Length: 88
Image 1 (cartoon, rainbow, N blue to C red):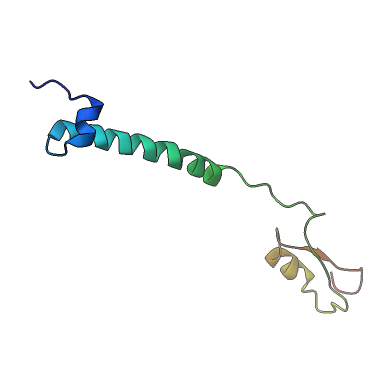
Image 2: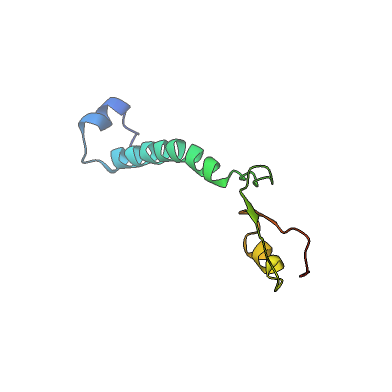
């Protein structure tokens, strides 16, 4: 079994498989170190918008009662406000 090469030898010589293993390990380690923060940011839970942060939609003249459908479709995107009237 051959002895592992010193780091300086691997930097100057590319023909030995032991150097390729060392370079692969270094590249893998660097990749993990660089990608780990990005993965952590992507996996971080996002804060749900509160009613104060969302736009408000005022439905005026809703005589046929479509306010519940509009509120359902805009859930999480906007707050639907419907003044009391005939339709419920």
